[in-house]
Image (cartoon, rainbow, N blue to C red; front, side, top):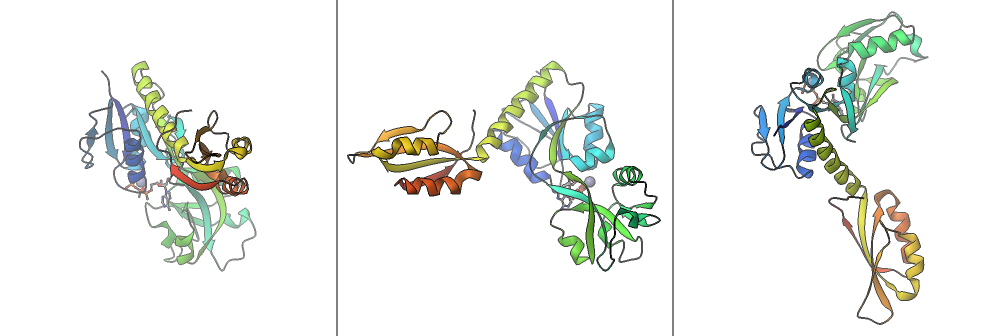
Length: 285
Ligand code: ATP
Ligand code: ZN
């Protein structure tokens, strides 16, 4: 039986969450000490640990079948791969930043400027699209120090909280793209590998859906059941079980994390008590 080869970052910002995703999907790795390859005893998958920059090319070449990488890297490498799922972690943006003392009046500021970046292709396309002519100075790391040491006037780099910019006396002036970690796939997967990928994606979706929901159990007077059922409709309909105490029931249901506090307020208004809220591990709808 064939194995699906998945490339993940060996060590860096994507590594822990990529491994956690695989583990939450119920996949047990037998040697996850990140040498080069790890295998699983309970799922037809092989993990390749690589530098994130190499992942799009390895997937495009078919050395790996799928990979987990930031959208920023995919766009910069411009490799022919398919994005199959957004993963919701490693969120960041690629932005232009300049010295904070400069009075910024708009994108034309960059005409004739020298910009340091590790993302020359994305930057060049953005400048061309905006009719700006600037000099791009490619450096591989610590881009944020370039203006301070006189290497460039401004930078084009990854920003998440913005604190790195602030501590280097810079300010973000244009957001060029937003990025998060995604799963990419080889465009020409065999039917057998596609089947394994579909199975993996199904498991990941169940975990992602579960994380967005909470399981709630509460006690309420029987007279309030119909009002409460309207507030927490659940997946199909809530479970209502009688309590030993006459005139009272226990209601079990599932609710969305983002509606949680609003719903709890309404439940209390209906006389609900002993409200317990629990995480959901997997959810298949
Ligand atoms: P490698 O050694 O594998 O080449 P790297 O140093 O290029 O690693 P990391 O800094 O680990 O890469 O970042 C990996 C990805 O995480 C980035 O490409 C980006 O998509 C995402 N990311 C999210 N937030 C940040 C952040 N604050 N700084 C850098 N990258 C971030
Ligand atoms: Zn990298």
